[in-house]
Length: 245
Image 1 (tube, rainbow, N blue to C red):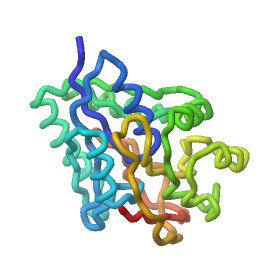
Image 2: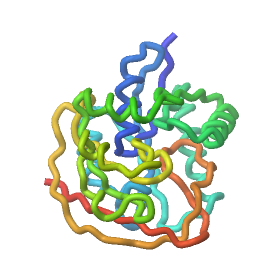
Image 3: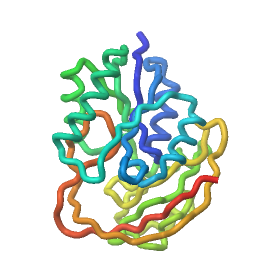
Image 4: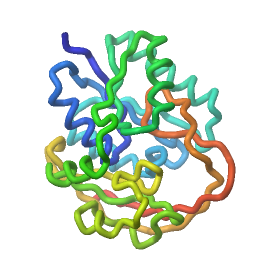
């Protein structure tokens, strides 16, 4: 029996590849996307992508989207309340399953499964436990294109920001860096591939460096691929702004 499914869309490569696979799986019928947005800056949470570029992705995917509007600084209780409200509405509208682009992060998967099960919603992880080097090469070979929009200054550096993911990018990654950035080394924006009707056009804007007091992401997430973190030691990131054309 086909399950009515919503997909948690983050704008990046893992979401794109997971969406590609679940779209081909007859056990699931994806009819909605869910994305969280920083309402103050009008950008997708974590990845920092402008809402205009998110909307261009959505148009090319051809599916309706629910955006979860979050304040700049959100406490866990408020984050969970807003997520619960969205998942409750989806359940009321007949959605049985939530799909995610996660690859590892056991605690995060367990938390999502347990919390969504309380609402009678199942979960699907199309990329789960697959080798990340295999995944990134599959991504490239399928014709997907993505560009780095955030990179860790500690693990990579400024020279990796604003780069397209290709074989040269993989060859340049330092030892110990996950090829899919699963340890937070980098985030991406996917702008072309077999799931889109047309390639998304953009220009590279300002590149900036920012320091944040962040730790490992908390696992308190019901319906989003994005994260809420708690203060700790400073961590530096390079960001690359993308401007829609």
